[in-house]
Image 1 (tube, helix red, strand yellow):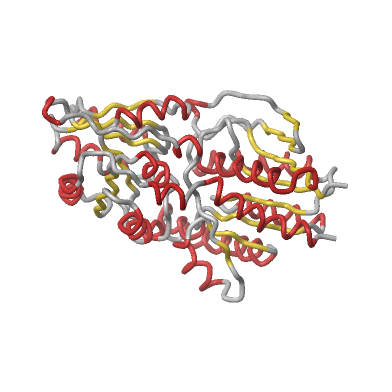
Image 2 (cartoon, rainbow, N blue to C red; image 1 turned 60 degrees about the horizontal axis):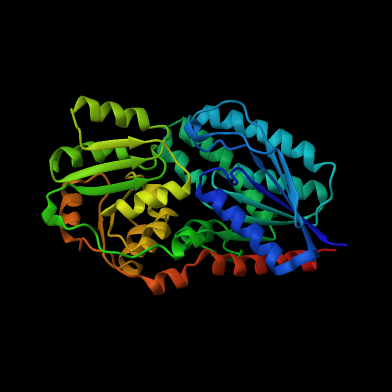
Length: 396
């Protein structure tokens, strides 16, 4: 009889997010490695990452040893309260579905901690093994998003939940080595694996060709693709850069999020016509925009917590061979400088430093085959699947 694995993930394709692509890759790797020895159940949500791109798909899918159930959430936006309500609805339904099943292993991939806590709760109730895949430091982020005393209250409460979930887990993976300092200091007796994000197959074969001829006089095409929220801080940097580089660059921002309207208002107030805002789109269309871009732009807000993170977008950007213009600090800055050729880093929210960094870029595509091979998602997920399956094999 096959061993049974429950995978909890708030996002899953066709939803557009790094978490959804990662979860699907892990499911595929588990099935490829274990074959008929495991049955994987995925409990996730109907597409909801971006309100503008949310379209319902099949509630239930089954085939080849994988069953996927998508839970419908109440309508919500990017606010903390809306997201909390949406998660409560998700957790209620997940608990209801899981209580009628018996699993040998629960795997939870989690960015905002609570999916990890939910996985720990289900594993505890069923006496199952638990594997956590941690994709962000949620507790530390609360200190940036809220002011005292609210931040202190939230950090205390969620900190207790984090300790319970991590200590309950049989294995914990951190999506970036930048998280090690935080987690090792709090859980010195625990060993952490680091199976990172990586380059998806869509980008492994990305066509390499030179950027457009600058002598044609057209503005430099700058592309950003991803979330537009507090974490990215685009509203604090893009309008000023567009103003200073008017006539020289054209920004195309593809995405949505809690700060999109703030960014839109700042663009309008400054009378800028060199910033284009585009709704989220399927990856196939996005690939076409990558090919048309001269420079790929990345930015994180100047939050102290973000010194530990490594945006998944880094892998996607690097695989295209395009010049990378990145406003990041801490671990992300170190990684980009050491791993990605033809990338320029500047301090977040520093428009003067950003322009100086742009001038340092070579406006041509740069082949990065060693990077793509080293960080191929398929290779990373094969290794992670083996790590997960070790718990299944040892389960009673």
